[in-house]
Amino acid sequence: MSPEVNPFESLQEQIDDASDYLEYSTDVLERLKHPERVLETNLSVEMDDGSVEVFRAYRSQFNGDRGPYKGGIRYHPQVTRDEVKALSGWMVYKCAAVNIPYGGGKGGIEIDPRQYSASEIERITRSFAKELRQIIGEDRDIPAPDVNTGQREMNWIKDTYETLENTTEPGVITGKAPESGGSAGRVEATGRSVMLTAREAFDYLGKDIEDATVAVQGYGNAGSVAAKLIEDLGANIVAVSDSSGAVYNPDGLGARDAKAFKSETGSLAGYEGATEELTNEELLTMDVDLLVPAALENAIDGDLARDVQADIVVEAANGPLTPNADDVFTERDVAVFPDILANAGGVTVSYFEWVQNRQRFYWSEERVNDELETIITNAFDDLVETYEETGAPNFRTAMYVVAIQRVVAAAEEGGIWP
Ligand code: NAD
Image 1: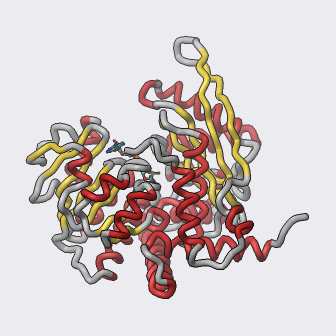
Image 2 (image 1 turned 180 degrees about the vertical axis):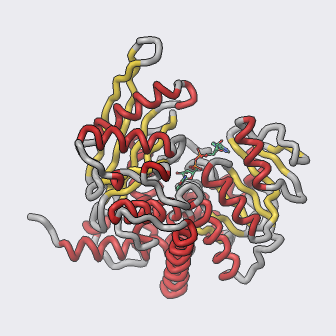
Image 3 (image 1 turned 90 degrees about the horizontal axis):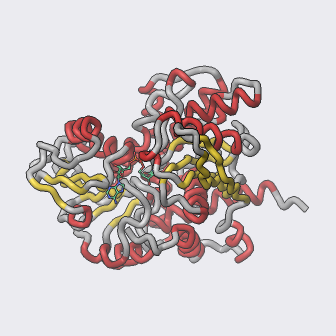
């Protein structure tokens, strides 16, 4: 990890890189590099022992030109205002990259959730929902899960919002449990788009994904589902990791068994399907065909990128490469398929959930997966077309070119409010 790299500056650099292939004025571009507004609040919450603790929380609404703000809520000790701003910006360009009608937002609470009981997390979440109530809504801003949040937290936010607003509005939040209006296929959606991107990438580059060797950093929702579905394509998942370290087996770890072990024991350490335990750095620099970073941002910096031996990187995490790492990979001809495409499955199925909530008509998992496949493969085609047409130096820049054009076109249609 390179915590010294500010993810908000990384986002701005990515927009600058794409601007070389676009003919927009500096003023137009400047607007694309800053959030429209950021809510910063302090949540005072009663703990189980009767004491009161204060938690800093944020919600950034980056750009709403293409539709309501959309993006997850993260619970993590390293949440900062700039991190939330960056993540909200990436959501804008992600939604535009896959062409779904949303702007971008993101929220977070600076907290290590493992230190708190379920009832404390519930009170913290409901307190945040009370603050968010003024700015969210199914036509305004629609939160979703992110790191360390899931269906449970989304259900609490929905319930708090609906109770205070005296309404039923399931589309105010996505990533809910099916019983609360969640969509079939949502839990696996991010991993599924990572798999679809990897499949299309191998095909485009003329490589065979069957028997390809794969390393996955981060074995949570995004990483473990991606590993399982990539394994189903015939690839060999040889190394996976979590915050406790990495496990390795040259003959394949068994993605499902590794996940079951982690769910049972809380970590991958001691997984019996592994022949060796490695450090996270060893995993990232292994000689594999495909590397999937699926933990947090800044996992690979410029120095580490020089040692990475994978030929293809598909980003499941948001912002896992620093801009320096990107430069090194471009120079070394490592094909990097960007987060704003590869992990867009989560927000895409969130979009399907929202559509279903508004219509009060629910789809089968098969339909969800089919519609998701169409959206991701269309976006992949848009990406390679722009990559070839513009001569952009890498796939990330080409994807930003596609996305920025869509955001600017929507803003121009709307005109300027005096
Ligand atoms: P998660 O909390 O389920 O999993 C995160 C995993 O990363 C855990 O296994 C954790 O142990 C591991 N990890 C943390 N630090 C690590 C380190 N230094 N080295 C190795 N592993 C480490 O979170 P998630 O939902 O899977 O999200 C992971 C990434 O994917 C984040 O960047 C998130 O923003 C992005 N993402 C997730 C979704 C989604 O729908 N879940 C959608 C889009 C993007």
